[in-house]
Image (cartoon, rainbow, N blue to C red; front, side):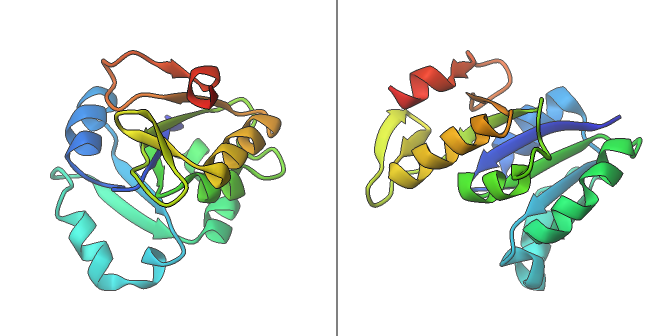
Length: 159
């Protein structure tokens, strides 16, 4: 199966992702796209602790992820792709690489220049710009913390 979920969540691999989304989508693999974590063995080990038996995790840079998207889509293993922020997802999508895909915004927390738009999503100028750029790349963006929650449209996020 191809990639079953693209998700932006500052916490990356955690209970909501593994139990909530993982329980629904049954992934074999999680791919974390983060330049910093791709070079941090101890952080990778921490994230692996949250995985269910038989699941694996890959930690890659944005550049490596862009090169490997086709491979992951063609792989029979069910894969969830996670980024910590919208800017990273935007870089992954640049040039139409995620055209036709849906991005799930699942957790962007309070920060400088950010206002709360949902209990689990806070957006500032940079995040709003990244959302608009994702759409210009042909991506559908919705927000949902858990798979059974109501899907929130981009229009509601931006207004």
